[in-house]
Length: 444
Image (cartoon, rainbow, N blue to C red; front, side):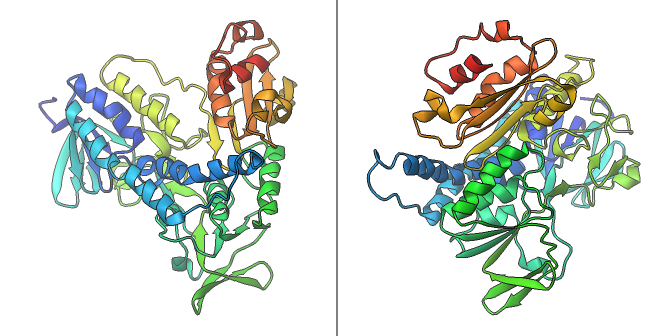
């Protein structure tokens, strides 16, 4: 430990951007402090990925049961209250487990809200002063809230995942990851769902022909999409809520999910006092994840960059800072290919060069109708398609897939994309048969 400071490295926030690297860093003998005002683990374990995928599991099962209805007899019933209870049972132990992981590694976990006093000093809950040689800002993102009359009548994604009963009518404002995933879940559990779009596009960062197939399927299942909705106000109307939108249009609903995006958690940190450069998109960093104040770094979703705001990116950045702070590397960060997926039914997953970018560069785009491939016929997937992208030298540089198994197919191809394997090299990947990985390598 530095003789001049309480800690060698102090993290503000205890999500994946911290704990994946902080625990092993402490084991190297570096003195580590972690300040967290909420639940240790941050968004993903407590109110994000883990909870979401648990709530979605019955949806996935009922979709497959629906397709295999000539084989699987009987009426499958879903129970939202039991589903929510199962989710809670899974995530409840995580903060304690992650705290133990940090402490077993030798880190100190400090509960409270941190505010910068100077470049080496923070004040916790305006009471306790803590100093550190290096400080990492890892405060993540939080839900954006609409700035309209009645916004307090809407709810965020955490509220949705904690619902004890599913509303009969549900309005979702926003059509990104959260809006579409929760529309899928709510619809499967019997809610009449209306999705209010800001523009005329859903999931704008994904390949739009694939997105349209998801939208069309949800429409067949009863989900309503309102394009260019221009939501203007929410107002209590008896036991329901009136949503005003468009040109003097309105509808009534039981519950509103504000899924209009996520914004950096930067308020009340004292960044201005220290002179740290940031804007509404996050904290500015260099190739060492270092801010303009040389002993202060940032990690995870709070960084202003073009990477997907997903757990694997935060994990990798946290691991990089561990190596940097423990002097295992002096190199700048070299981010790998970061995949992303939206857990609708079917899923859409992607990694590497996009179809749109490939078209501009005249790369080879291989189109695969997977619904006619035997392995996807095992569970009778009606929507299954992929596009593999090879550059001018024949190396695999990108993939996007829509299917119930898209995330696993893209995961299987990640090594080939990251290391830019050509077809001959990919051909040397002989996987277990029959699996989705084997199927993915076979076509790439």
